[in-house]
Amino acid sequence: MKFWLIFLTLINCEVGLAKAYVVNDQHSFVNFELDYMKVSLVKGSFDHFKGAFEWDGQKLSQVEFEILVNSVNTRDPKRDNHLRRKDFFHISKYPLITFVGKEVIYQDDVPTKIKGTLAVRGIEKPYSFNLDWKGEYQDPVDKKKKSLFLKASTLLYRKDFNMTWNKALDQGGWVVGDKVDIEVIIEANPTDARPAFSRFYTNKRKILPGKLELPEKLIEKSFEDIPSSEVSIKKKINDKAAKPGHFGEISKVVIGFLIFCFICVISFFFKKKLLEMLENRVRPLLAEFISDMILYSFLLVVAYYLAPLMGYGKFYW
Image 1 (tube, rainbow, N blue to C red):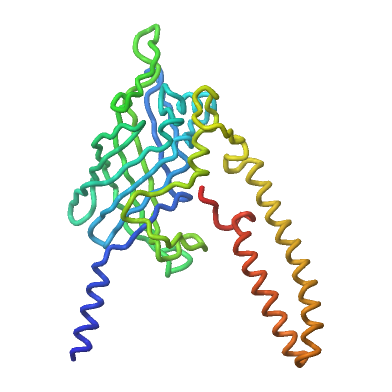
Image 2: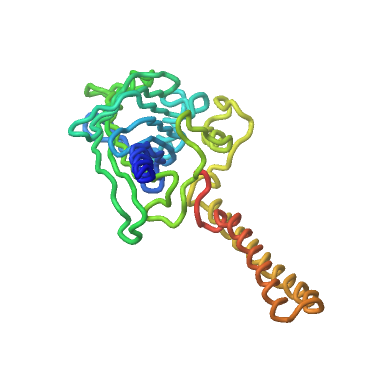
């Protein structure tokens, strides 16, 4: 009887534990829009970001989100370069936009708003996001995989963050509006489970609590397309090679595939030599089995490390 009481207690404790989630950046979006010349709109997005939070089925906590500002994309390279400079985001000094959640508002046990600190250009302001909580859904193919879906939105004022650049129109008004509508569409996956709609596991390293860390290579990418007078680092990164989908990424896939093919050829040559050596010491069938196990184990390790280069999995970003 005591055993069952202990067992049920452990189950209840496990159910109540908060689970860490990470944002699946391949299936999520950070979009914005603002007025342009009083009669139109500028719509854009940030292509590179990362986020994490904890969810225990009832409470949302430990919300953190970071955006790589250099990834701003309004489908106009000249405008994007202007947005990266001092008039707007000044990415050579402030490469990231961050949001840290402080308080969550619930309605009928569903998160409807999150209040926190938004930092842009090094200026921190209290901001809140309205949440459209969609909940957890199963993968339509693999019933063991689930993802959590939600949408967050807010209204941001450029002047709050010293982005005051503008030009007056002859007929009155300004080229760029001050109000910016932000919409963040999120699919998040548990850190201890395979993401839904994907065959790859998420990174199992501990992400929360604490600030999300970015690798040095990612920080260096923040300084692309900035005039040399504004860049605080000497190294310049080739723009085409850095952007996903360009020749630089294609060449990585080709190189990775060629390396794998070369290693396969060498491995089978090595297997032949190993088989000849073993046949003099053990039975032919056992020699064949041992040589196969060594060969395929080696190729499996090689494939694991070369997979990102061949288009499987992903690099950091």
